Length: 340
Image 1 (cartoon, rainbow, N blue to C red):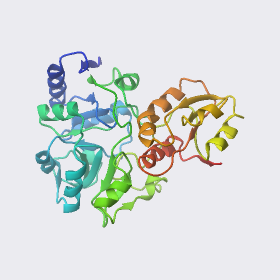
Image 2 (spheres, rainbow, N blue to C red; image 1 turned 30 degrees about the vertical axis):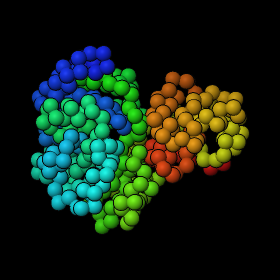
Image 3 (cartoon, one colour; image 1 turned 60 degrees about the horizontal axis):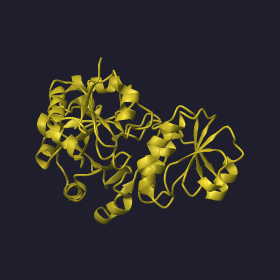
């Protein structure tokens, strides 16, 4: 299969949007930019199209997908019995990097929810994907546009490295703004529950949802055989091919630990760099969690080009957007954490 390149940056924007929409209306799959990461989009109403997404990614068959919509009217086609608390969150955080797990309508393909009676849905802020949704008239199921388990793609180059020749088209757009996937909150539990942290932080959520709970899977592995209602909860995710460890400690302790490992590579804060004598990749400042989020997946991908024996990542604080970064990194490291 030849993957079409639909160029939004130097080509005809309207023509590219129309072509992407046409492919999607005919059960094709298209990689599209969002403000979080690149998504691999397919019609949320088509089991045939969704099967192509799972095949291209090699995605585990019990891992549900997030459905993307472009306006409030479309929400009614994918979800029902929406509680007032969810509507208040939608009014505050949409369009943006915020996903709600709600009761699904019968129109949602069974392959999207993987046997659950719920659907995860969000309204992205990235204009191009909303234009594609509008032009196609379809809500789009769109997991990250990468090989399942590998670091999520934040540029179209990442997508092509993983999926060129496996999907119908990729939309060539700007690099993703936030760099980590959306915050996911379930409104189908007794109290609202944070299933996956993202750029909409727990601190902001508590202002609207004072009774929100944090699912134990945010920082630990779900129990064996447990069903999950959000992507990013169950499996080892976001992982470079090189064995990876997450390291908690001060800059001085991290440097002292790393400088003895001359054949390894450090993914570190800018504040660590002057202290390190080993190979390193800086992924942002310890005091700027948005910079860490934007660069974390690119850093994980770059680590595999360095021919190191192992990767050691300096862990961020578990506050603000740092919680989202930590959540991704603990999975990248397959829950192998070292405390200095």
